Length: 389
Image 1 (cartoon, one colour):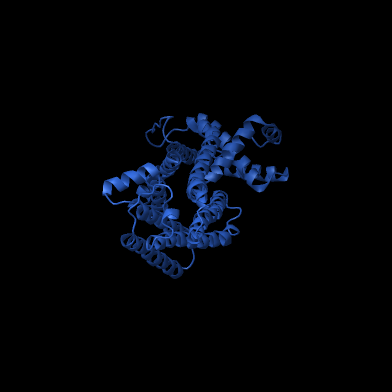
Image 2 (cartoon, rainbow, N blue to C red; image 1 turned 120 degrees about the vertical axis):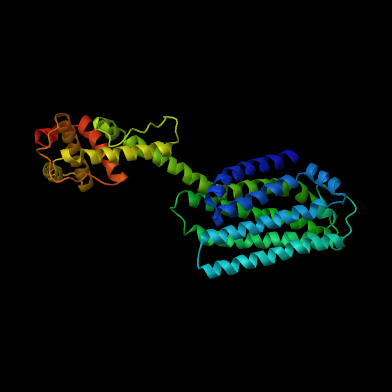
C-alpha cells in the first residue's frame, strides 16, 4: 500500500511541477493557482496517507493517531479545492461565483475545525495505521470525527458530480476540455464507490458487525488511487492538451511558411539579419520566420504588378478555384513574377505599392500556393493561360 500511494503522489507531483511555470507566468491567474492548490492537496493526501508516513508523523508529533485528523484535513481541503475549481471553471455571474466561493470556504473551514475539536475530545490512545475508521467507529468523538469527514467528502462528491453532469453536455465538441470533464466525471463517480466502501463498514460496526472491515482496508484504498489519478488527469489534460495543440499548430505553420521563406531569401533585408538557432524554441523560430516573410514581402512591393495579380485571380476563379485559393494562387504568382523583376531591377510593370497579402494566415495560404505553382499542374495550366510570365 505504501508503494501505491507514493507512486500516485509522484504522478500528481509531476503534474504539479508542470503547472508551476504557468503559475509563475500567470501571476494572479486564479485558475492556475486553483489547479496548483488542488494538486498540492492531492499530493499531500496520498503522501501522508501511506502507512509508513502515518507512523512517522505520529512518532514525530508524539501524539498517537495525529495523522488521522491531518490526513482528513488534507482530504477536506482537496474536496473544497475541487468544488472551487469546478465553480470557477464553469463560469457564470460574478456575484454567483463569489457567493458559492464563500460558501465553500465557510462550510469546509468549519468541517476542518470540527475534525480537530473531535480529535482533541476523543480517546485515541491505540495507534491504527490502516483501519482507524472501523476501529474507532463506535468511540465517542472519534466516531463523530470519522463521520464528519466522510459526510463532507460525500457531499463534495455529490455536488461536484452534479456540476460536472450539467457541464458535460455544454462542452461537447470542445476537444481537450471535454476530455478533461469526462475524466473528472468518471473520477467523481468512482469517488462515490470510495465513500460507500468507507461508510458501509463503519455503519456495520455500529450494529456490532466487523465482517465488513475489509471494505475499508482492501477496497477503499485502490479506489482512492484510481480516483486521484483520474481527477488529477481531468484537471491537467485540458491544459496539457492545449499546449500540445498549440505546439502542433505552430509546427504546422512553421513548415507551411517554408516555401515562401525560401523563395524570399533573395530579397534584400531592410535591416541587419537576425540569426536564430535551429535548436531555438519553436515559437521563437516561428516568430522569426513570420517577421522575415512579412518584411521581405514589404520590400518586394515595388516589383509587384497588382493589375496582373487581379487578372490572374479572376482567371483562377473562372477555372473553378474557390475564392480563397484563387487569391492565394494569384498572390503567389505575383510574388514569383516580382522576384524575377527584382533580379533585373525592373519596376516598370509594378502598380501602386501595397503588399500582396497581410496576416500570418494569408501568408501560409500563399506559401502553400507557391509550392503548388512550382510542383503541380496548376502552374502549367496557368502558364498556358498566360498567368505566370
